Image (tube, rainbow, N blue to C red; front, side, top):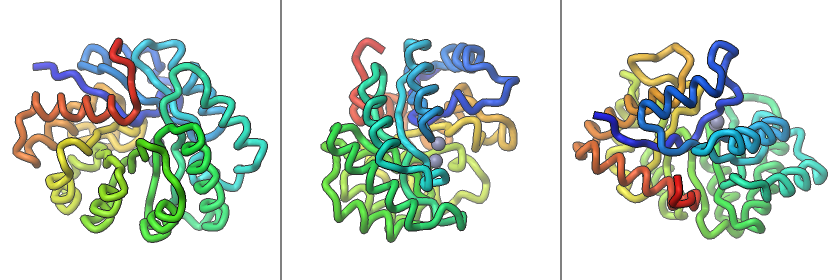
Length: 261
Ligand SMILES: [Zn+2]
Ligand SMILES: [Zn+2]
């Protein structure tokens, strides 16, 4: 049975040459893809996301700067991203956030870029796509100190503990789960995923990374997303069709997707 799904976080523009965006998109559509959010990670890749959104009817875009490139954040770049955020198909700002698992760029640079993008998202009233690794304390204290968009956003590829989940949910964020959920050693993450309210949960591939079991280690693509959904429905003891529908609705609400897709 094919259940329609929305991939809330993908990078079709970062796929290897063997995986052309057109082929990947076609395979995803055959597998039930209803919509896909293609996430920008720097200015050029944000432009690519906007182009993909123009090219494929079920693709939407985000524009922003990834924490791993946070040292590139300048007032000029902020202006460019702001301008690009008005393009058709743009539904969010990001991915931004904090990743302290790498020594570079400095935490100071990451925080500066993150704050700039929160301010931008709030002024445009677009939700934030947030990447966070080993930095939840700083992340929440920054988010709590600033005004946020009316739909605050999503913590993508969520791998935090229950405490981090509770704090994010309290602030109005959605939590998105990737193929990591299907990994054998991800028992504690599944325990967290079990308790996320049904109206605040999303799924994603984060392709080309993090392919779910049984594709683990291969190039990930949106047509694999049903594997993650099926583990999630087992984990939550939820009816697969119902869960798939709730997650689609959540994604539509967060990104204000048009009814026509
Ligand atoms: Zn990320
Ligand atoms: Zn990403």
